Every structure is written in structure tokens, then in C-alpha cells.
Length: 338
Image (cartoon, rainbow, N blue to C red; front, side):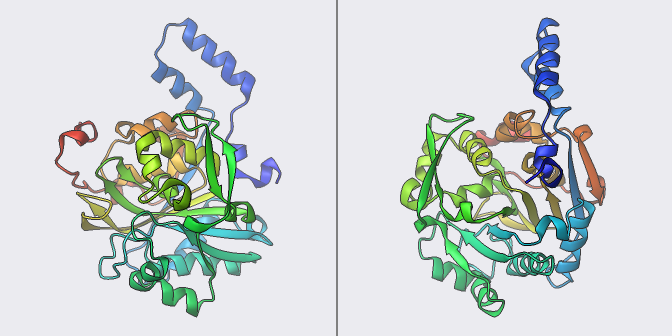
């Protein structure tokens, strides 16, 4: 894939520019935060906020227009294998704020099919319930997969391959990834917008815990929890390198997320090719400063931009849709509340 065809590669800064600029910053006695801010200047990204008031509207149109606003159309998709990675946490269809909604998964899949994808598949390695068939049935996704003839792959039990942990935010020297990722030309993170009782928020980057095979990392991915949640999020994002994120923010979750919180309608989708930028924008829609989320602060200047001035906002404005999501009242989350 050429740099012109890969939005993530276009966003990379030139090594010489960075080294020269960073050296000047250090010589000037400025802080590490200032260095990261300088790095971010070379990592600008586009993010689309699309209004979507319910799951019964024409979501396919919303997704298609959102992709068009990012400059992503048929040439980007044609002939490719597309892997959709939703957030399936609990087998509960009656709680639309827990899992990525089946209506959105269906709309995204159909959009890619109409853009001439060679194949579209849904894959997940849920961390709580080990019975994938039960989760699919009770979440409401199972019937959609059957009706739309969408293949589903359980990443918890996939064949694995290893990659070096190049970022090393954790002490994990290598990461075990499901072989299905190698089959996909485009990996799309489809998270649900939620607060999180440990990570602060769970969005497109945290959603990638679900690609890590349970046969290697346990349930609920305990190896990653023990290694450190923020660091694991960063290491996995750098290793998997998804090509697109579409956040289900139509109905989100506030409070004791990612499971025990309460529904909070927001009425939006958030789309982009740079996951830190997408997550930073979605975090602002929740009324939370992304710089207070440890893994987003650490991603700044390394994996993408999180500062508003470095994110080219498309579609709806943050101010027009932002709300103040409740955060679990616990001392461990005091850093999020400020």
C-alpha cells in the first residue's frame, strides 16, 4: 500500500524534522510535555462527528457520508478483506449501552460491501463470557450475522503469531496476536462509547483488548491487566495498527463502566483513521479532558494527536453535542475528575 493510499502513513512526521525540533526544545530547557506537543504538530488527523439520533435511522448513509468526509471511498476499499472488531462484553440485548449495537455493525458491514470489499467479517475475543454463541445470541448480533451472511471468528481461540512489542510501555517483550489479523487488509475498531472504572474511558483503543486471544491472555485478559492497562492499550494499538475507528456513541455509558454503568444517549458516531485522535474527540464529547486519561496522554506525539488544534474536526462540532458524563466516584479515578 502506498503512502497516498494509507492515511496513517501520511500522518507520520519526518524523522529529521522531529529530531531537529526536539533537540531545539530540549536545548531550550522545556518539559517532556512540550516535546510531545511539538511531536503532535507532525501528527495531524481528521476526525468526523456524525449526528445519529437513534439505531433506527439510515445508519448506512451516516457511515457512508462519514467515510466520504475522511476521503475514504471505493478506491480505499475495493478488493480488500475488512475485519470489523465490535465491543461485545455481556450477553444482554436489553442493555443497548453495553455492546456495540447490531444495527451499527450491520450498517458498517453493508457500507463496505457496497464499496466493493472482497469480504467483510466480524471478529471478537470477548473478555468476560467465554461462550461466544451465547454472547452472539443474547446481544442480538447472532441473527444479524445469519441474515446478512456475515462470518464471525472467535479470536479467543484463533491460531496465533508473535510480534515484538516495539513500544514497550509494558514489560511484555512480545505480543501474541490472532492469525485472522493477517488475513485482513483493513481492521476497523467498532467500540461502544463508555466510561471505565479503571482506564477512565473505553473507546477505540481499549476495544483492542478484544483482539488478544484468551487462550494466551486469560479471561478477562488478566495478563494484560497485570501488565498494566494503560501500557497494554498503547502496546496493542501500536502492534495491531487499525486502519479505521467508528465509535458507537448513539447511546453510551456513564458511571461504573464498562458493564455496570447507566445509559447516556449522545446521538453520534465518531469516525477517523487515527485512534488516539478519535478517542480524544470522543472523550471530549463525554465532557472529559483527554489529557487526564493516562493512555491518551502517553499516546500524544507517539501514536497520534490528542490536542484539539492538531485534529481537523469534520461534521458536527464538539460543543453542539458534548455532555458531562458521570464518572465513578472512587479515589482511583480522582485524576479523571480533576
